[in-house]
Image 1 (cartoon, rainbow, N blue to C red):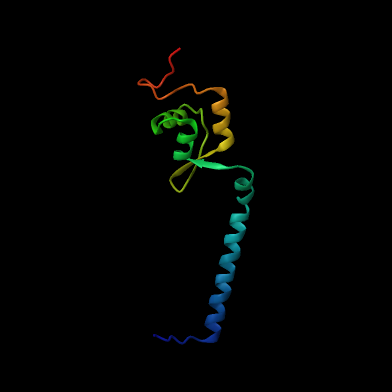
Image 2 (image 1 turned 120 degrees about the horizontal axis):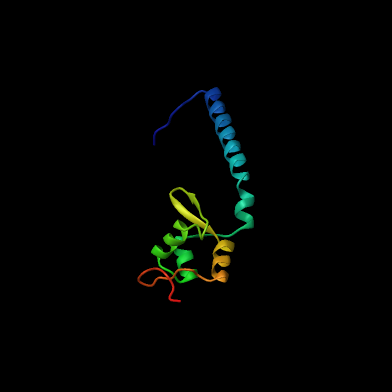
Length: 103
């Protein structure tokens, strides 16, 4: 076991800096907490399963602006309410060969 000795004042300084960092982190996350509490967010796989569509069809929905999404750490998230609204409106595209419904 290695023992490292530091001055008490240095240790107190480190503790204070860590406490300040924790406060900054808590304040930053408080800003976004209400967003996640009021809405359930889904990832690509959950949306595809919920809508019974392929990833390519989901990409088409995003490209056409039919399904809004948010990007966080290179991952897309969708509001459950937006997905539900698109389902209720009827899917304008499906996973057929050309991506359009047969009408």
